[in-house]
Amino acid sequence: MNYWTKITLVVFALGISIITWVQFNDLTRPSSAPVPVVQKLYFEGTIGGKHSMSLSINQVGGNITGTIVNTHREIRKLKGSISDDERFLFSEYRKDQVTGTFEGKILSNGNMRGVWSAPPGIKHYPFYLNRIQRI
Image (tube, rainbow, N blue to C red; front, side, top):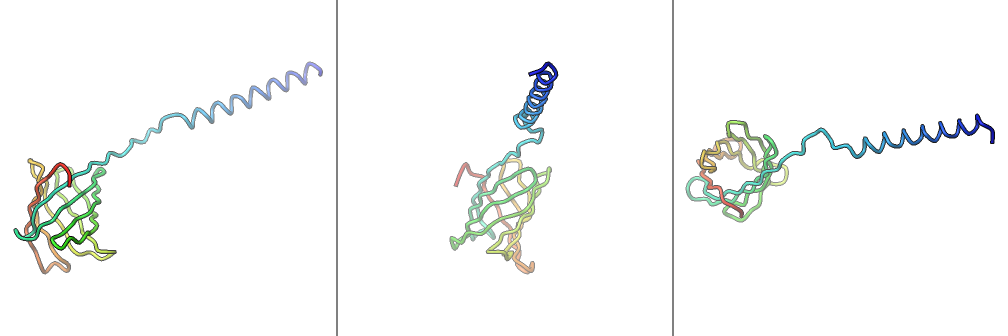
C-alpha cells in the first residue's frame, strides 16, 4: 500500500470517528427543555351542601386533568385550567359530553371553593372541597 493510500484511509477513518462522536454526543446531551412537573391533588366535599364528591386532579403548569366521583358513584373526567392567582375553570365530562362546570379558587388553606353549574347554565350550586392527602 503506498503512502497516499494510507494517508487517505487514516483521514477517512478520522472523519468517520469525528462524525460518529458528534452524533453520539448530541444523543446523550441532556435536553434543554424542562421536564413538566405533575402535581397530584385530592379533594372531598359537597356540591350544594348535600351532594358528596371526590376529586382527583393532575396539574401540569396551568393545565388540569383528572376525575370526579359523584354521589351516585359515577366517575367523570375533568379538564380545564388554573391561573397563577389560583383561580380555576374546569369541566366534567361523561364520554365526550360536558355534564358540569366548576369555577372557583383554591384558598390559602389549600381547599377549593366555587360554583358548579350544569349545562346550559340553568342550575348553579356552591361547592366547597377540602384538600386531603389521598383518596
